[in-house]
Image 1 (cartoon, rainbow, N blue to C red):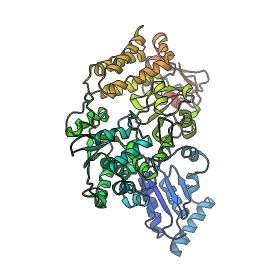
Image 2 (cartoon, rainbow, N blue to C red):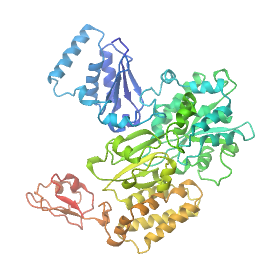
Image 3 (tube, helix red, strand yellow):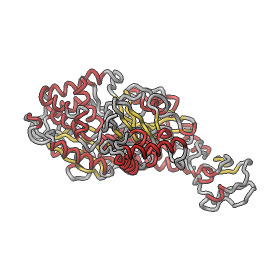
Image 4 (tube, rainbow, N blue to C red):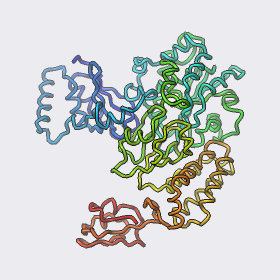
Length: 613
């Protein structure tokens, strides 16, 4: 193998850094330097397999790739020894001796590279990656987000060049319309229709905005794409600006995403230096300026009209529509707002054609959808699947099933504005219409997997707590209605439910969803509505029996020691409040009056001698 033919990629997205990827990167750089092979170790973004971070991928001459997961610094050194051919005999001899010692087991227990290898052809990695169809994520984990040349080598900014040199703005809008692309931010509004509305508005001043204000609990789709492939999003926003006639664009990114903010700003500077932003881009008459604005973390600012007010320096509160932002938006001018995923689809559609995108998905939901797969799942992370795939395929094939072999109970899809779909409806396809029929919504792409230990009343309460706290307070129905619903759910989980509580909940769900001004209030009742619809028996158990079937609500459960207790004292040792008396070799008991239901005894017991009743 020639020097430089091997490329070692290290995922340095937020998930990789949090898992220890920086020491792994340092170890690889050290070993590459010792071998005289500097420059072959490359920082990339996350490839979506967040459950296996830190991830290292070695791509050799000819394209053969080897993937390694959960890599430690010592394992990284072994990986380097395996794949990098030293350039000097003395170094080669030393490496050979080290590798031989490791092979013979004389390395003091150090890990071998093969211990961390993920088989792409079969096994968990293949099941995770195989069913996916990557459009938005095609560069994630492969390009260096800080190097524009890496993006250009993969055809970056060619779609923008094609638009500027060969297509009119109207042609671009037609192409996006023919692709069937719908907004991936939650509502699914046709992208081309929004662009066309802004295009025909009078006046020369128009704006485009990338909505990166991702605030859903458990969602990290936008963050990963912004961190891993920033130039792709910039190119998509530039094409949108050309199509609608805007000369100014903004990235509105939540301040809690500091790595994404830094990388977008760095990428914007590179794009300007290479002539893809600024005056007369690529010799055309089209000019475009872009900058980043950081949001202050208000969930409601993900709504377009609230985002615009925040962008203007005002308090983010939704406005009545019409007029729509495409007619009267930022600074009173026509403004197109698309989220990160939507914009990332645009360069691919322009390059590959509308028909190629429309060939994926269903009749009314074209293309792919990115999901943050989290919860009680074996293989969590970021996935991109063709529309029309079923929930069961995502959970069982891509996600590898439920952790610990527990029972699959359902999924919460669409974030706090989404709904809970039971396992018996796991054959539901992922598309806008099919999900709407269940009472849920596509949302921006959060998908939380639930098992039999999840209480659906508590789950509805969790998401309602979030939306109630994030309500801007402008609407009476949203401000007060969500508070009253939350009070009822709190009562139920405390065992203080009243006979008419379920009927009141249903009435409030109707009032809040119909009477609220913006999407936050209109969809806030969805978790309550869907859990009442599909898991009413759990609500009734909380109400009538003062019992939590899932054993989740502390006020409605009790911990008890079973007869198979051997008196190992582990439970007594970990109990933080002294509710378990220390009695070696005797069956223990739990003082219910002192017990705080912290679950530490259950986790510590090695004989399954503690149960929740």
